[in-house]
Image 1 (cartoon, rainbow, N blue to C red):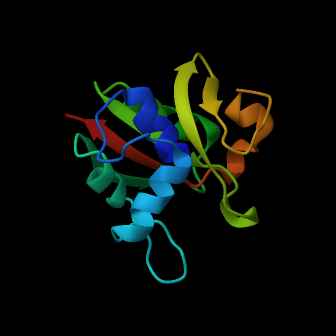
Image 2: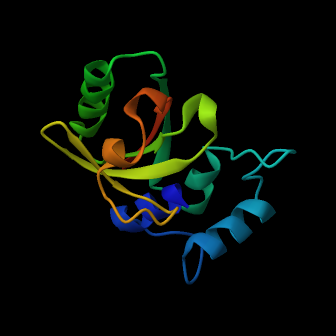
Length: 137
């Protein structure tokens, strides 16, 4: 869902009529977007939205809060980059869409329904384990 949120935010065209998280999952199910066991294939999003290109993942578990913030700022400083963050680390798995960084505050869009948009006020910064990113173009 967080990747679908970023695709919608980017405004790119998709191969999915009436694009939303539900139709995105249906498309991924039919087009190799999940492996056995249900894990998401990151590059599958690019099949659904060809101009939304998977770039990679940065593993940040074990880094300091400032190091994580610096990595995130480095990614977001690149034009056309969209990031999703895994925020529960070894305590579970949950991905949010990163909206922006304002000072020391990471603004998020949370498909889990959190009312706060402050990622590290909602989720312990120490548990943020991965930033996965896409680039439009």
